[in-house]
Amino acid sequence: MDDDSLLGPDEGVYDFDDDTADAELRDDVQFAVRLQDVTREYDLGTRKILALQGINLEIRPGEFVVIRGHSGSGKTTLLNLIGGIDYPTNGRVVVMDVPIGDYDESFRASFRLNNTGFIFQSYNLISTLTTLENVMFPMQLTDKGIPELEKEAIRLLRKVDMEERVDHLPWQLSSGEQQRVAIARALSNDPPIILADEPTANLDVESGQMIRNILTELHTSGKTIIVMTHDSEIMNLNGIRSLVMKNGELFEIG
Ligand SMILES: Nc1ncnc2c1ncn2[C@@H]1O[C@H](COP(=O)(O)OP(=O)(O)OP(=O)(O)O)[C@@H](O)[C@H]1O
Ligand SMILES: [Mg+2]
Image 1 (cartoon, rainbow, N blue to C red):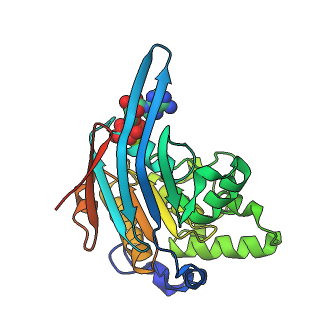
Image 2: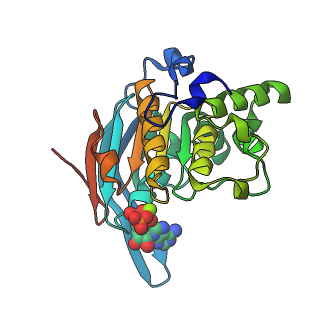
């Protein structure tokens, strides 16, 4: 254990500043995210559900965007569209200036691995893989060898103060620890955009604080952060842009 890992959650354990290697290549990106007249309708037999309607949103690289909204208002649907794991019924989704809907699934799969890191409310770690293997899992599409991937995964786990749990399976970790592993996994391909869906909802106070600190550090290091949340402490963080979703529509606050 290095000295830093002895610090508490408020004491700046996390240092993401050396993560900017790819950022220079992306300096010319105008919008991290651009949604134009986006609608998402789900067809449930005889019923249609309008989950998103007429969404227009522009997010600049490096913004920290916090979106709140009642259950069922469309937050997860919106995040899934930005992350390219769902598609709009109408409208355009542009991520890092790339109109992802214009490409086939194989391009989209590698695009989202390289450009968006997902953090979920329920962590979604693979139950049969260790901490280290979970973080290495999204790296498989690269042509690097296993030792190099391992080294990179350990470096990411050190950032979230989890390097001492590399061999644990998810059920052997606390909720806060699982979420920190999930964050390391989200960072595994050094994506410029982090998408988080209620990342502190299932955590105790201290773990929630750690996750907020990590998100803040990631923002400071230049990542674009988009968080769907009910957590008033995330909504009160410095430097954020706040929006609210109501019945599938998105409104800017303030
Ligand atoms: N795959 C789907 N098929 C049909 N309806 C869906 C699907 N996904 C979402 N919906 C519906 O779309 C609406 C928006 O759902 P969504 O999950 O985006 O809400 P949310 O704001 O994330 O809610 P919560 O705060 O409870 O997570 C809901 O009415 C939901 O039932
Ligand atoms: Mg949701």
